[in-house]
Image (spheres, one colour):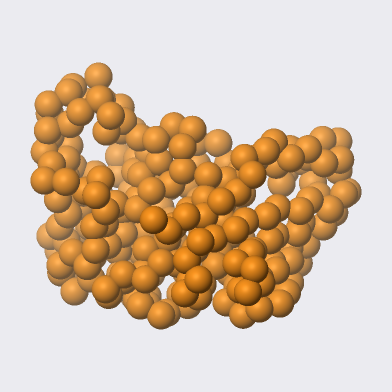
Amino acid sequence: EPEVTQTPSHQVTQMGQEVILRCVPISNHLYFYWYRQILGQKVEFLVSFYNNEISEKSEIFDDQFSVERPDGSNFTLKIRSTKLEDSAMYFCASGTSGVGGTDTQYFGPGTRLTVL
Amino acid sequence: QKEVEQNSGPLSVPEGAIASLNCTYSDRVSQSFFWYRQYSGKSPELIMSIYSNGDKEDGRFTAQLNKASQYVSLLIRDSQPSDSATYLCAVKGLGMITDKLIFGTGTRLQVFP
């Protein structure tokens, strides 16, 4: 069964450093998402991406964050200058339908980001 | 602010019992509702989706939706220790092009032998 994959599974970085989290969505999916979950808290939406551009972003997704689909398979989240509060699990998700669609979003296994 | 509310638990049930998990949501125009299961340190895993009022059954799981009351529930019959996890209720919001998922905080279920 196709699945969303993410690398790395765990990333440790120093505050102020740039990190890139990578995702390979399910191959026939067109809609891509990043969510994050701070330890002990709820899963929060960060950004959605369709047709090579951002469709929607949350207030968490400030200028330090960017997303890119550099080729036909990868979908990346870059944090330019990490802060301690960026420490969280970051989940990539993909789906086949947008507004009004009943399609489910399928989640990758996540990348645990630890900022020291 | 669109909200999804769940009791954080833990909900403790004995093996073989029915576990009942509840969720309310604030956005009346929401159309799609999902239950995900999340084991500690793992990603959300889809259990059920429901879009119409009433019940939807899949194996030991039954999702119930009441849009008038803005209420979604998940019943787990014949609960097993392996069902012990956090259950996340998610509601599909309405973005301009894509629909983001809005999650509740989750209910922690403990099934004891």
